[in-house]
Amino acid sequence: MTTLIIGLIIFLGMHSISIVANDQRDALAAKLGPLGWRAVYSIVAIVGLYLIIRGYAAARLDPVVLYLPPVWTKHLVALLMLPVFVLLLAAYLPGKIKKALKHPLLVATKIWALSHLLANGMLAGVVLFGSFLAWADIDRISLKRRANRSTLSAPETKLNDVIAVVGGLGLYVVFALHLHRALFGVAPFG
Image 1 (cartoon, rainbow, N blue to C red):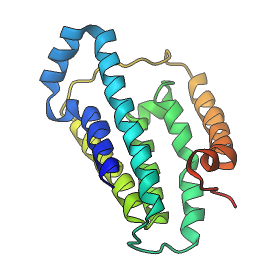
Image 2 (cartoon, helix red, strand yellow):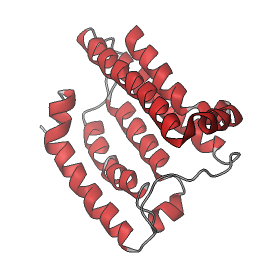
Image 3 (cartoon, rainbow, N blue to C red):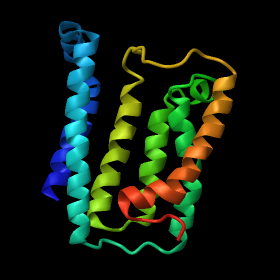
Image 4 (tube, rainbow, N blue to C red):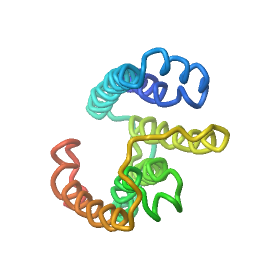
């Protein structure tokens, strides 16, 4: 569990720099340059993600049960996850979805985390998904007080929403039927 917690601190900590120290983040990014900042940010985030994966996998070998979710919550997760991949793509494909939600990636993170909390009563799952849910809520609130920073994305077009929906649903199917089991050892449908 320690590895999972350290990974969460590193990963979410890196993603929280703008929340707690926006001016210092901007100064460091200016000093390192856009490419240098992205490199440092990516390396730290990858290390954190690696530790999260290793820590979660290890914690699953010796599970601590906090609650036993009813079987129907697995079906609810499958339903709630439908928009997650669409929103993931919509974050980088500006259109009406992005305009309406402003931060579709954070909405996707919140839905993903909440849905997995509903169906996962193990301590490691509650720590993992609860941390991401809390972080996404805090980040969403903090964005109201921060200046908008430009991010890499496609130009805004009407076609982007179609691509986000069709591509997102396609990713959902591939992930639900194949990748989730291969990556995490859990088959959402089966």
